[in-house]
Each structure stands twice: as C-alpha cells, then as structure tokens.
Length: 265
Image (cartoon, rainbow, N blue to C red):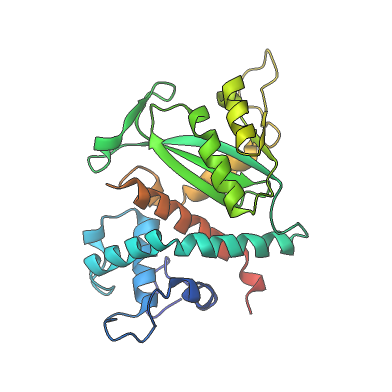
C-alpha cells in the first residue's frame, strides 16, 4: 500500500514492474510536477470506482493531469506492452509455450451513457443501446486483443480484424479460434482463414435448456467477469472508443500483475 492507503493503489512490486513501460519521458524530467506512481494510482482509482475524472480525491494529482497522462499511456500502447510480457511470464510459469496457438473470442454489450451515446448502436439480441466489446483471450483467459464497435454490428463482422490483431500480438502463432454460435457462417469462416486462423464454433447440444458449461467458451466469459470488477467497464462511459479500449487493457494488465505477484523479485 502507498502512503494514502487507497484499495486501488498499486503495491511496490506492481509499480516497479510497470514503471519501465510508463516512462514516456525521463522520470526526473523538468516538466514532470507529480510522481508517476501518484498519477498511476489516480488512474486505477478511476478504473476501480468508475467515478468521473472530476471526482478524483484531492490528495491525488489534479484530474486534468491524470486524464491527459492516461490518454498518453493509452495511445502509446504502454499497458498493451506490459500485458504482452505479463502473459508470456504467466504462461511459462504454468509450463505453457510463451505464445498461444488457440484463442477464444466473444463479445458483450455495454450500456451507453450521455458521453458515449453519439456512437452507440442498438443490440437487438440484448435489447440494449450501447457499445459492443469484442475480446480475444488465450486458453488460460489471458488478454490478447480487444475491439469496440456500435452494438448494432454483428459479432461475426469483427472476426478478421480480431484475428489479425491476435496474430500480430503473438507472432502469427495462433492457428485456432473458438467461438459461440453467433459466429456461424461461411463468410465468417472464410474471413478467419484469410487472417490465418481456423474458426471453430462450439455449439450447444440440441434440445437443451438453461445454463450449460460449454467447452472452451466459458474461458472468455470468465475473463469478462474478471474485467467487470473494474466499475469503469460496467458501462460505456467514454467519449472516445480508444479510451474504452485503454481501460480494458489497463484492467487486464493489473489482473495479470496480481496473478504473478509470487514471481516478482
């Protein structure tokens, strides 16, 4: 815990691991008025609580400073780079190859708000207006890629872009993508193949009712549940889709750090 003791504050091990990824300028740069750790803690407070930037407690750096620095980190891919290395460490620690060969993809729809309403769409299946978040994880549930679209767009339309992002993140090692029946279709399978991935649709058994634990598919659902512990991700509270993506990657990065604390020196 840091001197303030907020539950969202990063511990020493997590901070020391993330620091090299966050240094867009020297740590002692003349223009830096606030410690990086304080800014990071403020950003995590927003992610954990879901509060507005203006409500950041006064013993954190100013809200506008935190917001601007957060956008710099998001745009520079700082948390993506950290999450990539954390995923490698976690997989090796579990006696897996560093890069996965199989992934699971799925989506969820976040309710829109006045901030995000200008780019929201209506999801007819969920009966909800908002933003659709498409997520790809490995078979252990580790974050690989995330995309956002208006909720009225079909899940299958994002398969190619999602697979291309995953292939780039893993050095083109991924060969198979598991998905639910929302991704059924010859065109979808063809687009996945064009991205170098075989799409495998895991279907529910016929004549079944209620909840059924389906192979592979439950992994990505669990990852969505982990991410939902960050209340900023409970709804689409962002004006820009890139900020929504950034908060998802930040949350995934912190979750990976928490899982790997025993490995930190």
